[in-house]
Length: 169
Image (cartoon, rainbow, N blue to C red):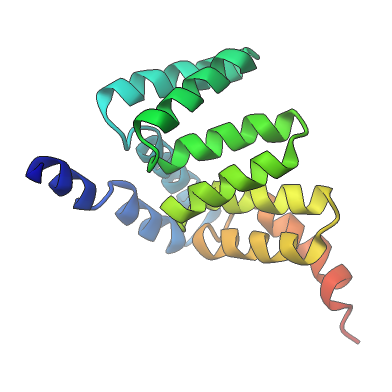
């Protein structure tokens, strides 16, 4: 029991990487740090989940969304605190036009990892698609607080700010 608690309380490998991403001083530096964060997120669970996650991600990339969904559902049962699996399943829901389920999963990801810039970006994209511009703008801004060089959120902020807040004179 103590070992399990110690593992649950241990800092995640992604935390210092997220700090470095937030402090990036150039687009190229941010791109390198972003890759490091994604790598850490994909391997923040145990070896069994890592194998299942790899299989789910590969299935997603090859268009086998049923297998990907099955893998992600199983991972959630095994490790419901694994933020990245919620994010990946949300991506499947988004691609299928199931926005309510995608939003719910992105919120689950953010409950587990509040600095998940991918989840914030996903929320921005979905909120913009359903014309919830104020929520989209807020989500994009949250993503940029974590990843100041992220292109999709930066473009979203540029596009939505005049629509939500008006144009300056």
